[in-house]
Length: 261
Image 1: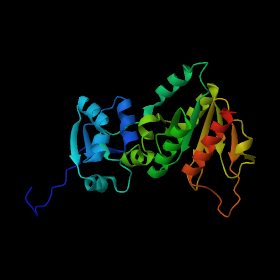
Image 2 (image 1 turned 90 degrees about the horizontal axis):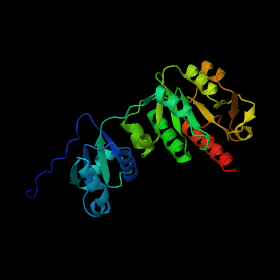
Image 3 (image 1 turned 135 degrees about the vertical axis):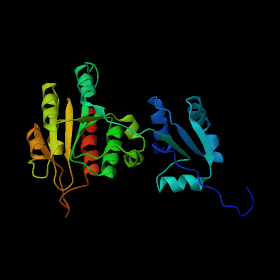
Image 4 (image 1 turned 90 degrees about the vertical axis):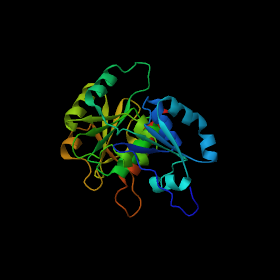
């Protein structure tokens, strides 16, 4: 390129979503979903990611080596770690997959731990909830078809790989799905500020579904009525509630603590 000439920025592939970071891209590929295009930062990052790049090339990905500022521009503050993959959008799994999974649950496996999100429409909160669910070793996240955040590129960016590794099951009718969970032996614990019992008093060691409602409104009436028990977090300060993704992390890791004895 001639001195002083403007460098043309690479165009983002149409119809594809960006996945940022080494862990997220590896999770994507481990699921057998090869990226169509891979942007890799030039210099040391490219050498560090040589194995990942080679695997993507074998899978048919088009690899472009770019300056860091191009990846920074696309990531808009996200930690891309020198790699961005472009792949088709994610789609939630159908509820039939959930029932098959639970009905075939191995008797010697740890009891299922599920997260149910009722009315969580903010994509940043959804992504953060997926990240917490993955970190806690949850076995799936259940969302309703309506009044739920889409599984889009922003969710994938916030989730840092969890959107690729954590199964998300979309159900048509949440209250009806909760009734079926009960029939399969899953105990359903909902979170509500007006509950009398504290989270730490609940037994979360068996097959468990934790239900989190939307910020402000909380769970819908039918969802609340479908729960086996309601619990709350002890709030000692002046605020009345926590961000739903923060509360989700606390509840999930209380289940982890109990299960580890």
